[in-house]
Length: 298
Image 1: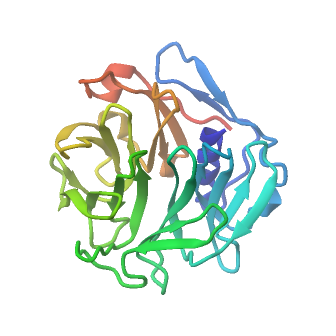
Image 2: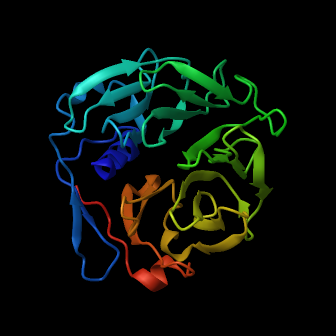
């Protein structure tokens, strides 16, 4: 379900995007095993999408689905059940959502949103309760910046919160910054990668971040058309995938629950690719190791 929602957010972000009637996902293995197919009945009442859908997060405790959308006079966050029933909407201090992540410690959950707006709420990373009540804000609302004490952001793209409370943020959706930060649960900087460029550990629009269970941080380096990988403890650069993104850079990267696959969205070519995750100790290259990607069919 979460993968189908990723496509919803991907295609909803395109001007004049058409509603898909059928969609099939394939793995990157050459046998073209079908892994996913779009559930066209989800959600049950799609008319609740009144804006431009942009990002999605799933609460593993309650099985609620949080979809953020953009637009004037529209609720910025829509909440659905796993079955597609509409539950609620909220619009608390959200200006232009870019990334959404539901953090869970096993008993409680909270919703984190990155806001790239240029108004009074923008350039921030915000935590909300699952009902939409503001909990705390990182950054200076309405003011872009690069400071670490206190923390400032310029169009922060996405956030990932580990189960131990550590926070990973990619900051730089076309703004001043091109950086990956790791923070403690009390928001102290543990390590930082912040060089602009095309070399190893350098970024040009770091757009998405996720962390696997063996300690690797995966970053969609959009303008460089690659995914870079770092050690989550030290921040050491481990490798990069580039040859599988020649047509368009990766906009979003996520892991399936069993971590067998990486789900990568490419906005400009309307594609979601399913790439086999490499074994521990090996990064390699996605195209050379795992074969051809399969394009979304509609």
